[in-house]
Image 1 (cartoon, rainbow, N blue to C red):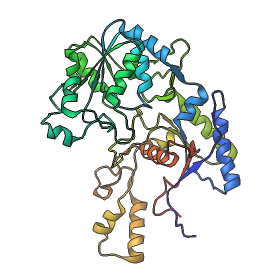
Image 2: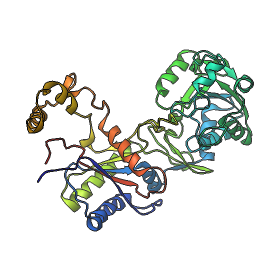
Image 3: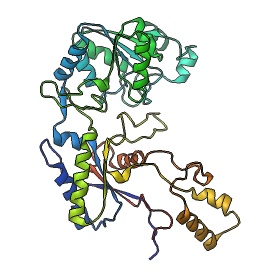
Image 4: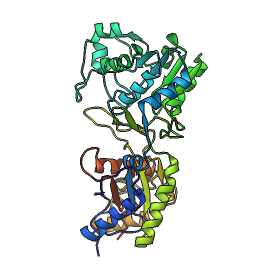
Length: 398
């Protein structure tokens, strides 16, 4: 029978998951309910994706502001600490900032401009061009920033993040100074004690600061790497990838230790269905909003844990390249069969092959995690589980 459908991403509803729930059983039962009640068919090499938030909730991987404050205090003592390049986010950073400030006497926040690392803007490039400001070299004080740019609120949230962050620190009883700079080394003119709050360039940032006189240089990935007073923790990422749970608590990001969970789910699915289904945990996808300019990647990785069948990058031919070049004189069934024959004969590694030009140069888990994140959304869809079908098929699959 001719096949007319390619890749599908299907949101699978599940119950509201609480701490202590057996996520392995819930995940499998939710998928099997969809098979029984909605007629979904399972096949080998389907992918079952589970959002990271329910992993944290089921395992109770949380930390309070006081626990964050204690770890900060133990690491920095009474020194003035520079927080450099935090993202501007109520969900991602505001609660962390409360905990950090609670553990310190003075905080210097160095914000990048015109936007943070993941695209949240406090200004536009037009704004800084109009004021003849060079974002690569100019360091602005709070006063100078206000003189130049006044009080701007975020387009979507209506928040002035500069005063919002300043008020958080001061409400915790700490002194707060805010500066604006994109060069990491600028903070060293204010303090040698630094907490780097960037995500994807954090290793380079820490190296540069240490090489240029930083005395204590840590990142968010160095805070809560072990339990503090019974807190949750993440041995790989610390506070990176955490989300606001309540005004006093954050939910931490899963680590690679969850590879046991995904393998257990895969094994149970095989036991129940006889199908070899790959399993992954996903957080943020990796895509950019064209209007808001925000990168949807505030987590340290897209997928912190996945089964072995999801290792690697795509190995695909570009159909339109074949049609426009190798087989430009063919059409109809002859063209279709020629392209299918090329796919059947493709090598196991197409790196450097012009016929693969334009295919997505990303890890498979990054692609699938983005697809899962777009499908589940971050609101009230109620689908913490995503079934992806047909990803490993191609034009020859029937």
